[in-house]
Amino acid sequence: MRILHTADWHIGQRLHERQRHDEHKEFLNWLLHTIQEHKVELLLVSGDIFDTSLPSAEATNLYYEFLFCLYNETETDTVIIAGNHDSPRHLEAPREFLKMGRIHVVGLAKEPIDCMICIPDENPRVAVAAVPFLSENELPHVSYESNIEKNERYRERLKTFYADCVSHMPADLPKILMGHLFVDGGKETDSERNIQIGGASAIRASDFPDGVGYVALGHLHRPQTIEGSAYPIRYSGSPIPMRFNEANYRKKVYLLELSADGTLVLDEDIEIPIFKELCTVEGDETSILSDAMTEDWNDKYIQVKLKLDSARTGISDEIRKAFSDRGGDVLIVQVELPEANDIPVIQVEDMKRPEEIFEQFHKANHDGKPPDETLAQTFNELLQMVEES
Image (cartoon, rainbow, N blue to C red; front, top):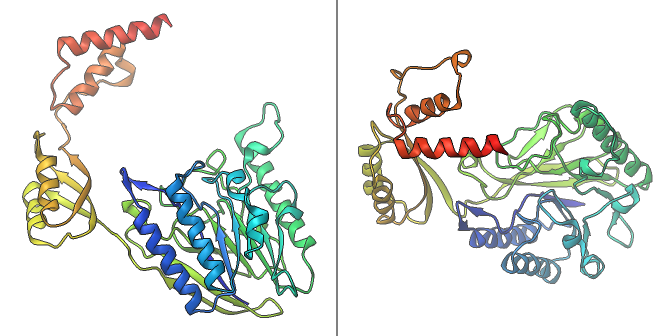
């Protein structure tokens, strides 16, 4: 069976208040074409379909338009699970209706049997454990429990849950596990909403059971394979960069083919095109304005990291206009000022009053100038309110 693994679409996501509907639409059109071109029989979507639990009508329409095209223009079966950004109930509300279109959605799972799907419905060729995001908040409360103890309890729950899933699968079918969680060894990009407990990993590669052909994960936005298992444990990553720091590596989907005995006879990645380029420009005022006027910035989102000797009013607007004149869209201008090394530093043990801390902070961020009388008075009033409360 030929399988395509994707995840973390985050339909409806905004980048510095810019709507990304067109990028997601282009991706889904590309995905549909890729499924047709490679004759994909099973599509796996490992969570975070939407960016919020209450997606807009526009985002919802885009999702269902894609599912309709998938049903109408292909013979592909689809399995979709909820991620930590999704509303499980919202996602699986049309579950029974979507089944008629070969689309299986799992948003909630109290027992392993809730996740068991055999594809296709008649004469199954593969068994899928479609495990959605399982929140640690669903664990029974234990008084005086440390974060480490809670993490271990959560890890044991996931480990047992996946083992029970495999035990319920038909023995003669190849087996695929799906999940939306953090696995030890995974590389984050800072754009994922944290689903770890106390900063510790939720599960390890060795915690997944034996007898599996592939683990299709979501949550981490960088495409990657987790080491430490006899079979691939893989994050497909997000299809478009969620932040500027994700523009440095290419986005992918994974194409697999499982033989009847569960052996991977095809395992390759397909690079996703760039639908909207994200660029970072760094330097002083002269070099950045020169770049803005000499390069082609048409239809690009831009992050500017500007180094200045001293603060200057209006420079951000000048930079935005310079790039705009060349077709670019500057989303953010980060100004870096030199550190004031000559400012006296008050040692922590010498600090007697909050006013001193405030004055030090103000000097460090305003070229060594202390707060004026009005600002100092406002701070004192706020301090008094806090003390009284």
